[in-house]
Image (cartoon, rainbow, N blue to C red; front, side, top):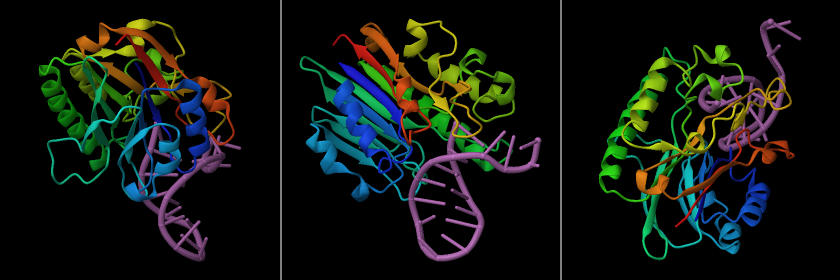
Length: 259
DNA sequence: ATGACTTGCGCGGCAAGA
């Protein structure tokens, strides 16, 4: 089973790239973030025609997440823990695998900048809610994949220029500590489970020739329960999409599970 | 280097992103 995640930075701006990606890599499940549209504006018909069931949790202008799945899935929208939170940043699906199921979440964790504001407070509170929900999901002892744009640079080697991120909400000690707290529940970072290589990035800013200079960061992650990690075969960063015309500033990350 | 892009909204520039 192939599962991918991609912050697409507007699904309507990126529809041609998205359809090409579905055709080329044929993921069984694709998690999208920053679709930047309401449910009714999502290009559902084109994606269904490509052979996918479409599950959207959108909002006007900002944020928005979706899960595309070849198999019909049972879906829950929103991260539990705060009924006042109206930002569309979490959608979860139970996907059948033949003999069993895999539970997949598409996550768009808040950016949190600038750090001295309520935006950073919201990010940390959101991470606490994610930790609480992940603890519950892990207790189910299922094959679980928490995939998405975490807006967290886990370690210095995950940035080309770590010093430049020292004061940034993506790399502050408190942010990284909460990410470790999540991992320490028993989740594996799929990429680091399979590679210690340097210069593995998933985001390059549009500005200042970041792509041309390979000035990137790794902030898109797939976190796996033990039941999923035990079946992990390969992890790939689809870096070539960043070189296309009108790319997203993020590229997809995908895994193959032997299930 | 003061800024550098790209998006949505909606028609004039602003907010947000990372």
